[in-house]
Structure formats: structure tokens, C-alpha cells
Length: 298
Image (cartoon, rainbow, N blue to C red):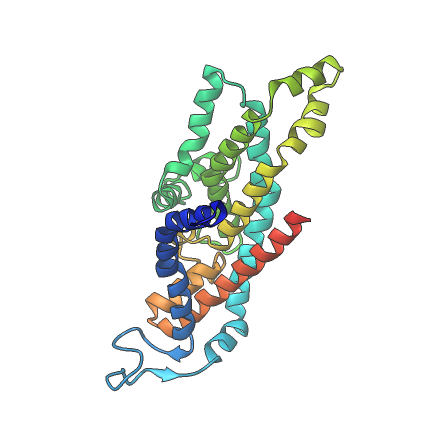
């Protein structure tokens, strides 16, 4: 006879069996496969090893990883990812939090505003990037027409063609695209805070500023922790919008680690080198996740 604990264990394993198999097949196995590919100089055509392997296939060991870590363009792309993380944490999340505090109550106006703010997140990244390319167009873009009212004729408004303006221009799109998601998460967290707490604070004479900064936001901390994690991991994997708005150019001015991977792995058919880049990005994400979880537990 199975004890209750053993029975619960096997029931849990039965429910987890299919997800574990899928996770192993679609996540664990590809990671080890990519690590194996990263040890070769391989163009992706034909078998990697064996008697029929292509003539351009060569075992290079850790040479691919060494080349990545000594490539200034890779570190430049890593720096752009770090900038996206910092700016997202400093600008995007506070905007989402403030808006959530302002429109958290259930009124017709607030529900309409939530829908409007959340719509950009639903739009595909590629579509969003393409639309904003037209907005930033030097010839007929809305942004160009608006700024030409305040600046003299002949001013350069090639936002996506200027190395100094392309990154800020793309980051504006990133904020527009994703702040609605974090706002909705904050609203969900705010709705989980009992109204009795707000009423008690009002009776004690707390001002709206004191209520939000000393009571509501501290109670919202678990949600803030989750959104911070999503924001940072998402910033490390930024690709679609940047690729749709210029492929990391001009002169790598908006390059990120994933666009760097795509260029080498698929456009230049250096699958071994591209696989090594994927493993480096994976290690960055795992390292951050491990450190973050330890800090959160403390």
C-alpha cells in the first residue's frame, strides 16, 4: 500500500510528465545541441560530423567562444542590451506604475484608457517596427512633419539613418510597445490590495502621496519584482523591433546580442559561430536569473 505522501508524489509526477518531456525536448536538448555545434566551424549545410560532412566543417573547440568574447562589436551589442535594461527600469516601469495608479479604479474612462495603452503590446513587433519606420521617415513621416514646425528647414530628421539618433528612436518604440503590459500587471496587483487598507489610511489622515508611497507601492512589491524580471530578461533578448527598424544598423549603432547572433548564424551561414553566440546569451540569462533569485530570497 502506498502512503499518502508517496501517492501524492506519483500523482504530481503523472501531471508533470508531459510538461517535463516537452521542456526537455524543446529547451534542454536544443541548449546542449547548440553547445555542441558551437565547437565547430560549420556553415549549416550538410551533416556536421561523419564521412559525408562538408569540407567547410572543422572542429575548433572553444575558438568560437574566444572570438566572440574578443569581438568589439559583440561587446558593443551587449552594451546596447545593458542600456535597454537600464532605461527600461528607469523610464518604462515607472511610467507603467504611475499610469496603473492613476487608472486602477473601475470606471468607463479608465477601462477605455487601459485598452488604448495595452493595444500596442498586442500588435506584432514586426508590424510595430514597420509602422514606426514610416513615422520616422525623413520624407513623409509624422515625426518629421511635427519637428519641422519647431526647427528650421534643412534639419536632418533621418532618425533611423543617424548613428546618434537611431538607438533613442528605437527605444521610444520599445517603451510604446511594452509599457502597457507592465501597466496591466500593476493594475492586477493593485486590485489584489483590499480596499479596507485604503479606507483605514484615509481615516488616519494619510494624503494620496503617503498612501501610494508608504502603503500601496510596498504592498505591490511582489508584482514589481515580477515585472522587473520580465523587463530585464526581455531586454536581453530584444530582436524583432530592432531588426524590423534597421537590422542593428547604421554601423552597428543599434546592434543587440540577438541581432548579432542572427547576422552571423543565418545571414552569413556561420552556424557553428552563431550557436556559440546563442550559448553565450543563454549563460548571461542564466547568470542573471541565478543572481536575481538569490537577491529576491534575501
